[in-house]
Amino acid sequence: MKIAIASGKGGTGKTTLSTNLASYLAEKQEVVLTDLDVEEPNSGLFIKADLIHGEDKFKMVPEWIEDKCTLCGICQKVCNFHAVIQLGKMIMVFPELCHGCYACSELCPESTLPMIPKKMGELKHFKKDKLNFVESRLLIGEEQAVPLISQTQKYVDEHFDTNTIKIFDSPPGTSCPVIEATKDADFVILVTEPTPFGLHDLKLAVETMKELKKIFGVVVNRYGIGNDDVISYCKEESIPLLAKIPNDRHIAEIYSKGHLVYKEIPEVKQELDKITAYISTFKKGGVS
Image 1 (spheres, helix red, strand yellow):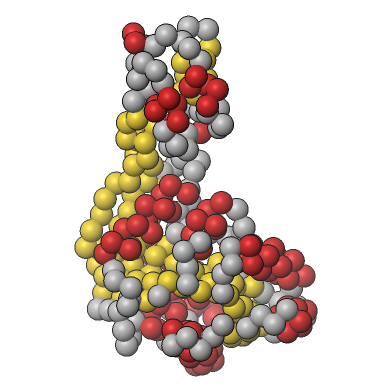
Image 2 (spheres, rainbow, N blue to C red; image 1 turned 90 degrees about the horizontal axis):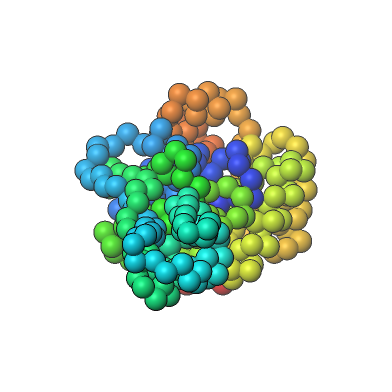
């Protein structure tokens, strides 16, 4: 089962929920937590595990072979992202803009733009007991997170069977990286906070999940601040409210030390129990 944890904005507590829920579930069953926020992964700050595998990740980009090129201009015409442009008698390739669609390479009549690998990031796999943790990190200067997110998901699919609980800590917002991180999820947990900003961005996230035809529920973090507008919105829209994690200074202190919250705050563990119960019901086909 694939569970994506997302939000309409950053700073709502996705990583807090992801790391605590994964660690809690791993006390009883095999779990893999994957940090798909590849531009700024931080789940690893809370997961103490041993590195068992690491590998570089590459994307394919074109390389211009000057002596064979007839300067026909097809490559520039077919590139929608301006990654390949013709300047006089030269073809310039901008790898950071390339989406790896192969159009310029495949349609070049003289085969002067072969695709070559370019390193875009790194993947690391950690393990402790029943908890697996997979983290990918985009190289500084790389502009596209989607290819690395896609390859990271592929790694998880190839190394873990369908019976394993797979939790994906997704990027914030509603842009392309979020779409890539959640599009294959069986269930999406949207984390928000009970503030006007939280409600505004939750609505954006909800509309995105509806467009993707995803089954989803909401977890309210820092419950007790702001107002009850988020709660009312969920009721009006018939969105399952999975849990309410209290606003507590002690939680912030534990988090700032890189520790798991549920092990020290009973109220948080109780809320994780509610989420776990809902997930169990969902797995049995009782949620529609």
